[in-house]
Image (cartoon, rainbow, N blue to C red; front, top):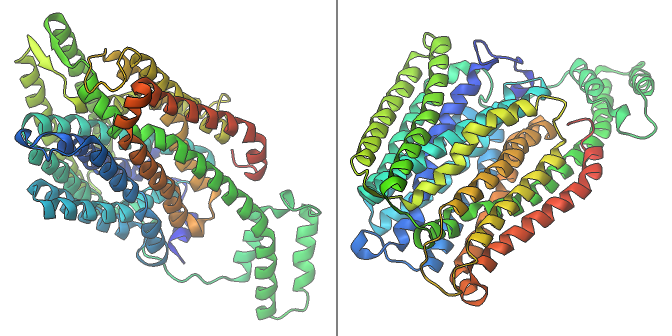
Length: 559
């Protein structure tokens, strides 16, 4: 039996449960949270570190070169999951791949913290390879916790909250430590919590039973294949077939046949009937992946051109009442999400501490450290209440904050009759991304073409991140869910890798586009630059809306 068969044969729920979901979902939630803490914490610092002058501890790179390296790195991070998914499907299983990937990423962050040229590039390579083993396979394990397809959208939305809780904490804390204390401390902090994520998952593996285990060769018997034939319901998708004809054809071909002949006939019939539905559903996944490229191409400007806009074109020095309002707002912005995640941690402890004590001890220790860093950060900010400079990396936490606060609402909507189809959700996600950039384009209208600095209101970046986040909630976790629902179980790890391959192209193209910010600023101004990211996603969203009937037909009952 292969790894995907373990997913297929798993129970619909793994006891105990937390918030009406298997406890395993929240093990994966926290593992992914610390991995995303490390990834986004490091990503928040990368461009800032590269463009900061030598006397500020950076490398003094040009914006163009920094954006290009950012695009290459973030692109390759999403290329290697294709290989990692294939390796897990064929050889290691999901659990071993996740452990190996987390270990390599821990080494990568440690290497970045050394801050020599060699260790810097070695660290990037280790992060790229480690992410390839980690990313597609932990996503595959989420789908394996459920047989009830209707619960997967909600499960992936909860899982996505874990992703963004990690991103929120990573950007906030690694960004603050890197900019205010030292770059190497920021990079090193990312590695510390990646290590905690590794330990927490490693000592919790028994919770998943056979889900994600090392693949074994599967053997079929006649009953297996007969059940497969009936479960595939081919008479719904192949013209000329109805249920009685399927049953009749199965029975007629088995009369007076030997055991070997029966097996051959049934396998041939199953493949004949399965090919049509699988091909159609994989086509839908491919079309979704293409439109995902457009979304992430725009969205990933957050780490490059939007970071540059925050650093050089946004008023970030606040005084008097403005400083006081920011400090108190940032206090609640920081503390409330961590309180929510700590509450989830307490629920997981209550249900699983006796079963996986070591995992919970490492997870609990990581939260003690997080709270210690948060208290130090808050104290430092309140000590400078008269004037404060908002870190350029701070704006990156808004995306994660909005997801943590809005994802539960959308998760509930997806479980009601108001739940739109997958293609409509994708269309909405693209349109909202474009609207977010419309705010930036409008806010930049007062900046002269070619200007290297300016001081526009923070409102425009905040509004952009809000609409980008709503778009992301509509598109990204739902996309993960549909890959899980539309992909044959035997191809699940590989197809998650292909899904992330779309992010490779998006980040590569996005990095190249961001590198033209200075040239486009000279010719059409920053407002024109951001209008490009307004028009293309909205246009793609409208096309997706037109394709909705075509796609729904080829999803064959998956909604």
